[in-house]
View 1 (tube, rainbow, N blue to C red):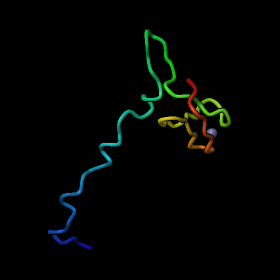
View 2: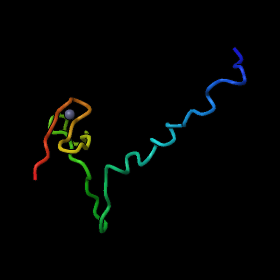
View 3: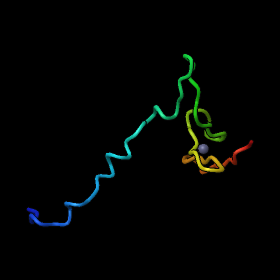
View 4: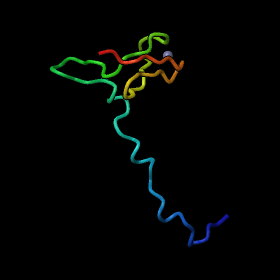
Length: 71
Ligand SMILES: [Zn+2]
């Protein structure tokens, strides 16, 4: 089905391109030849499952586990 030329798609921002920042690399920090994890891993799911970084807590997107930040 051919699209008509004047549809509203013209002003649509390309959000997909914006979101593709980092990838796996944001999960690790390299400092002085040492690799450190920038986020904690899930206690339930084990290492390899990184938790999402929120303002006051971390959450696991895999099992839903929430851990509050400690000072
Ligand atoms: Zn988990």
